[in-house]
Length: 315
Image 1 (tube, helix red, strand yellow):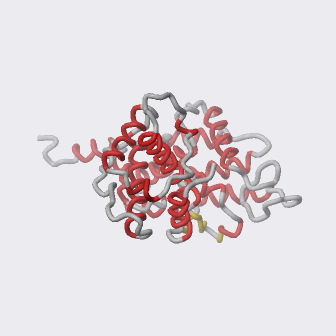
Image 2 (cartoon, one colour):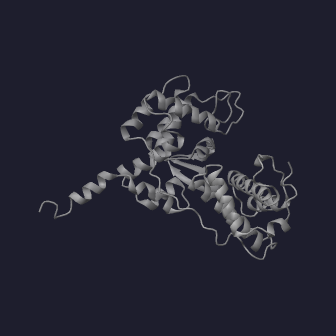
Image 3 (cartoon, helix red, strand yellow):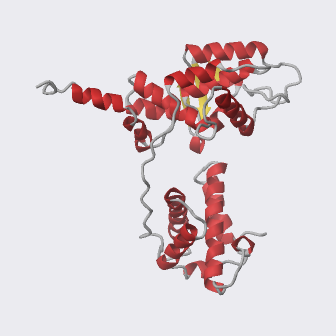
């Protein structure tokens, strides 16, 4: 299916001018493609008719069609994804962000619209979710159960996750020349570069892995972590490895994932390392400190101790 100029121009703008990552551009594409399909269905079809919205052709959608979209139409779309596609508040909020960015571009950059129908579009309220993480003892159990033909590699992967709090994409993207002494350079969301410092456990695990890391017949010579085919390890393989050892440690593999190991690293640093929120923000590569603040609500013991230390507590 061909995609219309009204969509492809915006995606090109995101990729080339705004330098958004491929994953971000893809997310905008999915949201706006669905939105345009819904608009065609909403405005051109009998909505009582049974139709697969994925089959709707949007190749002929033009700027004249876009100019007739109103704020009411946008809320109709959000009702649709809520009722018919069971989108959560978080998923709807992402779609609102996509629509706002799209119509802002059409007004202020492309200059094809005079009025922005998304300007007053409200985003659904998102309840704050508490992070799911392993306890200190569970983390140790996970590291201690690593075994098998690739135990050095797998131990290094888990150690870096649990000590540095990397994202999955950041871990699989590590190159040999990204590591210099106790520093690791990673490329995070939005292609933003940051420095992560490696502690003794990470340095030791990487050294032990490097002793057995293949050198002959390696396809991706600069990749730190290699698959059994001697290529850069994939996200899917790392997810499988993590799930395997979570099960082996007697933990719930449905509850924990690579991202939960990132939560674990942040939680352990906050609880035991006396790390302030701004430092933790930098370590995790969060653009906004509000994202990091979820870790300030996790330690009930600190709250209990604070109350007990009140000088009036024994009065």
